[in-house]
Length: 71
Image (cartoon, rainbow, N blue to C red; front, side):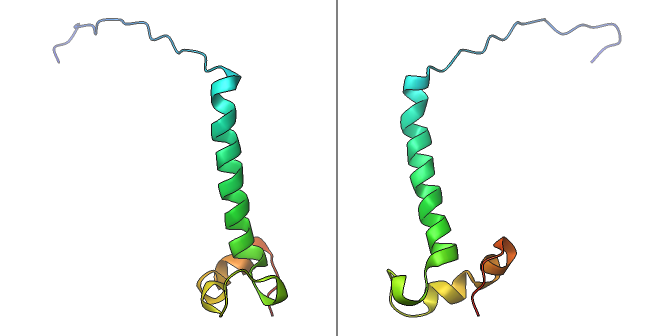
């Protein structure tokens, strides 16, 4: 770029997203996050949805990182 050259100025306008369009995505994200929280934090023992220890062992370190007891 040559000295003294200026870039063309362009104004960027951001549109406003209506809450009605955002709400379904927020609910979807909340359901996914709650499912992940269950899989990481609660899936063991009598309330286990999946049999076996595979999920528990897969997320074992994440459980400790988030403060869930598991021993």
